[in-house]
Length: 121
Length: 107
Image 1 (cartoon, each protein chain N blue to C red):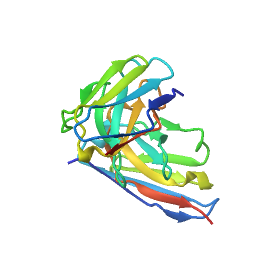
Image 2: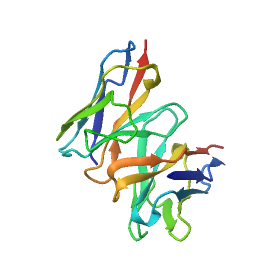
Image 3: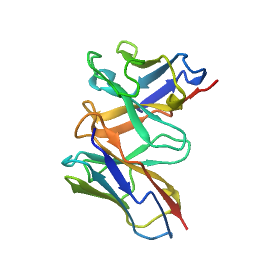
Image 4: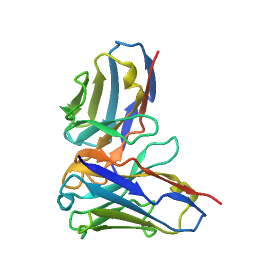
């Protein structure tokens, strides 16, 4: 059974940092790029970052570029998102998502349960 | 980035009704389109990919059509368990982008 399990969310003050993790199981982790998709309260979905299967290529949305860093450890089947200089507008549920193939092919066929990040003083 | 526009933003229909949601891309995306269902408090669930291919395990009352810029998700006979928000997403060109969602309610 394919599983993606996020952790690391919580309440942080503006300007603070947080590190999210995603533990993957049930599939060959090294065959897929993995993305972080967030959803602000009551809002839609936004892909904020993605990383290639090897970890050598990354993508960041303009809204997080220079503040967030994505990484993966293929020996442990884990994905991370280091979030620095957090802003109120980063408040959201963060999901890790696996594509059907390649980077985004076939859409995202598996999602984690999400982890909530709240940026507030 | 490619913009995805869904309509309507919400709808209410009776059980057994046929429901249609449309999604328009700001440029040609071929058939690189997925549809998701999201229920409150849960992550999105993939329903359809490649515009019309039903994901394994998804009920046959869901179907998708379209190519290029215009796409449709149809629920042939609305069931109480279909109450959710539905999103389209293009994956033809990075970054993947989503429509704003359509909230479906049952009268």
